[in-house]
Length: 265
Picture 1: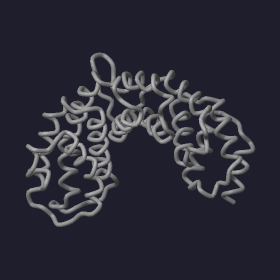
Picture 2 (picture 1 turned 45 degrees about the vertical axis):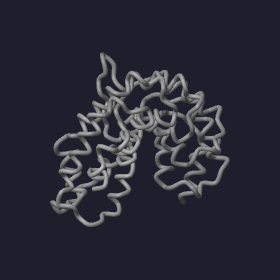
Picture 3 (picture 1 turned 90 degrees about the horizontal axis):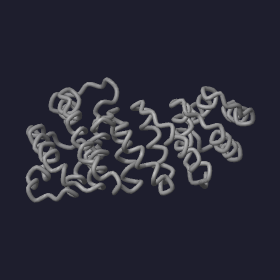
């Protein structure tokens, strides 16, 4: 309600912050607003109208906030009352396919400023499109084609989570980019692997294997690292994904497999 009443005075950064905070607000689910749909339509309209003037951070923040919102309201087959905020947002973004035009607008606004993106914002942008499984065409190429080229140029500045999210997104939209995966594998192999959380290691191995771009040297390095540490902070799903990735990629690591078996037993 505050965003709707102050739309005209809100900066682009304010609008981006609204979308960034919306997924968290949905968790709280406060008093229901009978005018919520109208208000959201106004914010969506203003966002699309001003999208062309957003800076890199604003675009990435808006894109990620909307994608997380869509992911949240689309999860499972849970049914909500007609006036439930989750049902209203589901109707706007999913049933009316509002997300298609919004993400196409984000993509077209992004393409001419990709070289200005820092690693964090570029990763968030790519990850958001992976969440909604969209890869719009942009002048004969796709968003993932052009963003992949940008990512390759600044790979050395990516942090572990940013690399993990980016690779995962490429797999989710089935975007092929052998050079990106090859060069990312080399960068990861030379990084401090202690800085990678279990989920990030699991997602990276899964992404390489799922994409058909398995990198034996990266698998060896990550496999040896996992063997050398305790597995107590790995969730069962992490270990399952890691084992699946090695098996699917056809990369043998008997010591790793034994350690996973012994941990599960």
